[in-house]
Length: 228
Length: 320
Ligand SMILES: [Zn+2]
Image 1 (cartoon, helix red, strand yellow):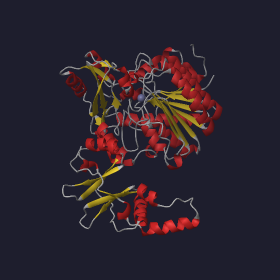
Image 2 (cartoon, rainbow over the protein chains, first blue to last red; image 1 turned 135 degrees about the vertical axis):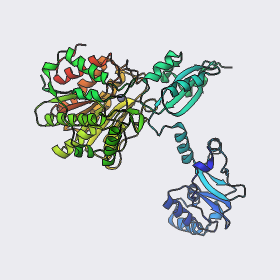
Image 3 (cartoon, rainbow over the protein chains, first blue to last red; image 1 turned 90 degrees about the horizontal axis):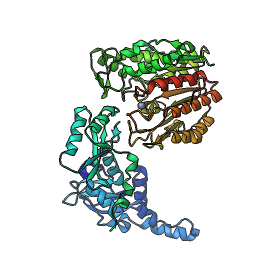
Image 4 (cartoon, helix red, strand yellow; image 1 turned 120 degrees about the horizontal axis):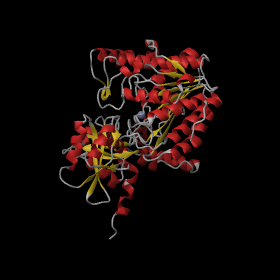
């Protein structure tokens, strides 16, 4: 669950003296949108994005002489002139949950990963986080999702896990979530099997309620809570 | 009345999945009992299984996969690739018989000896990948039949309709780049059901974009949803594709009483679905249709579902 396990370590970088056109080509050739800017010691000094470059380019619908004049200025520009200095970074031992929350708050598409000495170690993008969470959910592997309602008391989850384990079924993941009834929890084990018939019957026999997944909308949860 | 073939062979019962496995030989016996009790046996042409030639299997699966299956089976291994796939020493031979039986049914339809056929086989096939057994499936029977139709009968447009409640990941992946095979699947939404593929954005790859089509069905839905998808999506898709033959991955596990899924198709709903599928074959493929059993685990309902299925193939009225 650490950033260094999910980041792209072979990161493509650029120096601050490089031209905008160089940066643009580097992004295009590697199909990336963020370039960390580093000094000679591989220390991070900024970030330049495809949006920064587009913003610096003259609009194409201006009159030709103006366009040419602006283009002349642009060709003189260096990466260091338009990069974001001191960008928001993340550490290799921060967790992917940290990264998830930072992405949500900071509204950027990627964070350079920097160690305690300021050296660039990699880059982590929204896409890397999505891949990590797809793995965590286990949904890349064939399986079946069960939706179980349990009472919020000690030992209930263990009963479920034990019943599933006794059937010799492997877990892809288990999510536990709130339910409208405050004394209950919804449990969503993702089981790596097609064979869910017996475990469903067994859980019912143990007194668990199998939820109709359609009655469980995460997005609707607040509207069911008492208003206050 | 149509000349309908019915593939059934006692050797299919030899594939032993051990105690408590839903994909058990009782399923097939229940299906056969329903067809027999419905008085349909004298009306159909019973087809016996024949072992598939290995080259037919190799048209879909890697030779190394086939060898691995055979060796594990003969060495007495009880599972293959996943614990789901329980097997016994006969499983490999039975799987060859199932695939070969389907090829024979297809051959008879193409040769005009029969009009259509229902293949009551096991093990099922639609989850089997080129290199991997999955979801109780070892050889992808329907894919093997489709390749046989391409290789031997030079068909240029083969339509596959998969109404098993689970997505036929194997069949989709085998043909996702092939524009000459239309794979159409409706199944319980992959967020809830095995195997987790078959989302609506999966539409084929490269030259095959457009000839893979998935309609995921949310838990709790039933007859109305099937009617909607058939009218608004299945028909237009097949109207555009115009198949020369229709192959059906026939799973009875979408039935409301089948515990393997959360879909609530009724017995009457199943008849409606099959009548529409037959009508599609009638309109574009001269009635040529071969239905191949996949899942379906409710032993109490399988007899009536199978009986109705065969009656529809025969062109008989189904009592509502
Ligand atoms: Zn199924």
